[in-house]
Amino acid sequence: MQTRLVTCLCLALVGLLGLATALADASIALRFPTVQISVDQWSAYLTEVKALPDARCKDAPSNQYICDSASQRTIWVFTREGHPAHPAVSRGIMVIQQTPQGAMLGIDRSGHYAGSRAAFDAWMKEFASLDHRQVAQWQSMLQPK
Image (cartoon, rainbow, N blue to C red; front, side):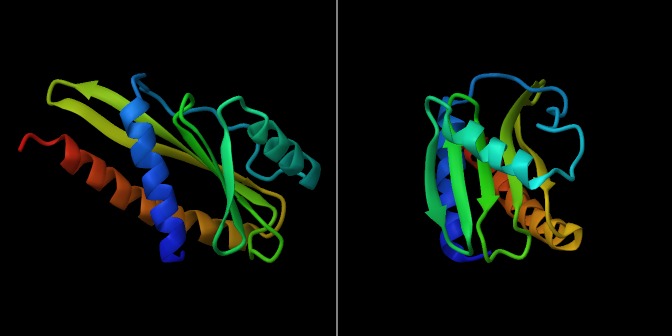
């Protein structure tokens, strides 16, 4: 994943951190009942996300389109034509869980694809690495100085 995309995602997620107040104790349900969806479902999902009142969407490197919603603490990344996993979408939701040791932050990541399963799996693996680094950064920001 290119550095600009990583930077965009990190900045958006850090911004959402400042606005997050809800707690999440369990995985969040998938948007569709199965990971594999139709192209029509993918298109409808993109339209649905873009219609959210506080959605901010922009083109990103590597044939991707990023939308975020501060009120939902969520970032969606939709593939564009030319991306190996297209059409596909990844959804990352910031979750906060209160523990006796303090707040624990995480990202609940899910996605759907209407193209190649192998390309989708490779793309989602990139997000797993990015999410791990982002959560570590958030946790370090929460540690007392």
